[in-house]
Length: 200
Image 1 (cartoon, rainbow, N blue to C red):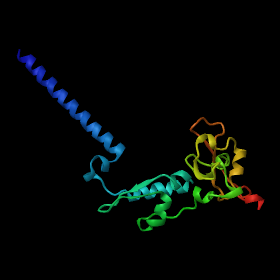
Image 2: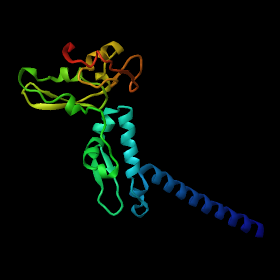
Image 3: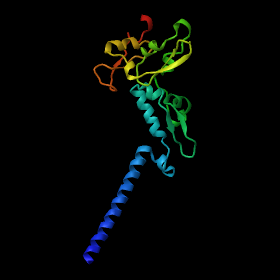
Image 4: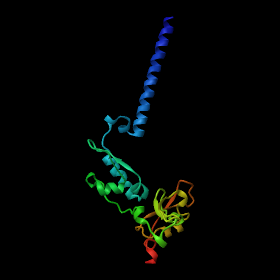
């Protein structure tokens, strides 16, 4: 009988330890996945350096969507959170270390045209160089709208990327589908002849 009680006590201890281990594991997973500031605000700290680095990486590899469109939240101890894209932060938060980038953001690439020169939806799709890029166009009622580029809008071949280079910077990476399977893609840099508009 005594042996049975000892075995039962050990079994209970083991169960308690397993439960505690699972709870600790869940806390770690949630903390590292969602961020400690969301899980436990008192554990959070500023993330300025992290966001600056993310923006610098997006700029260096010319990730148009990540730099121009993806929203960022900058946390500074003792201050309100700062919301904005890398482009906006580079303009408004230079004191925090954000710097300007050579990427030309979509709204600058394709200004909202009017009259006969206005893009329609089909024309907007032909200008897509990255997934998530936004292209301004006019619908049949002449209302200005924005087209969100998807994988299917990317150029199909390397040769077709050349037509999407005018107005871009030398070496700008145009994404195309090539032989890849969605959502993967290939990239082709714009050459000096490709970036000229109307052959100029």
